[in-house]
Length: 418
Image (cartoon, rainbow, N blue to C red):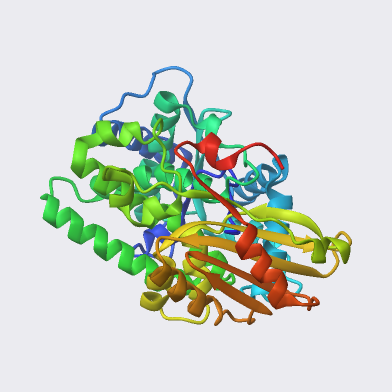
């Protein structure tokens, strides 16, 4: 239920350049920007160890208005706007967003404000933001040039369409794409460092970025979700590269991580047997359907979504610990009429009963308390939103009847359309 979902934007954010100067020192000419782009493409290719074809890929200069229009068009061209809107309504039930928040408008604004450049995989073009200071522009160009390399070798278009029920897995894939590019950017910024020194530099960058998250003009749930693909993804790419070099990072595009859990804890992706997520399907009790409640949205929150949700009321360490035992979940937004009042069900499974108990205790403390929350063994279910009759019995039935199946592939995780 992360508000970013998978909006098909390969954009470098201002948050990634936390240490960069904030004022543009001088106007950068078209010629200078083009020369910088050429240098960035060469640098990215050398660091990443991949060659960019001489034909078919290019760059162009875009104004802030042009970049904003492109990003908005990408949101509107897919089903992302509807998914974001419905996810936002569920987040309102949970207290993570203020009532009446237009999450689509928030996402458009924050993306437009934070973007520093982007790669258009359809036009095979790296777009250069013409308003950014040179100190910021160069690393951003390396980041975006890496996206061109990824596209040339792995084909990014196949990842761009949002898939219902694939929210968490697609967030993990987005983290691969952005984390790979961010790692290349970091190595280009600080070349010829020892592994220990590079790890230290990356830790500083992540810490600086985390400290700036809440300065972004957006609800905290949105800003924290926005940064994850870059910081979390970079840490996954770094861990994978340590195990098997850039070839192992290449393999991430065919053997993709299936959950944000595997990004947050790289060992759960790297170690064998791999910690696979459960595909959870919640059954809506007859009590709700008889009262006219119908599903409007279904999707997993994943460990990342739960961690960010719990950060609304808990400190980072407590939220991370409570979410760490996640094994699978499904959130279901229900409404009686389109755009009307809602209730939100969350059905989840956890690694063991102790982890389930810790998660249940934390979920009882969401900003808007659940009407009812039940733990049965490794299963936890809760109900938020508009008051319903016999909420405790409804939630107990959700916990008892949810279906959970281990998924080893993206197709198995998403399953057939409901």
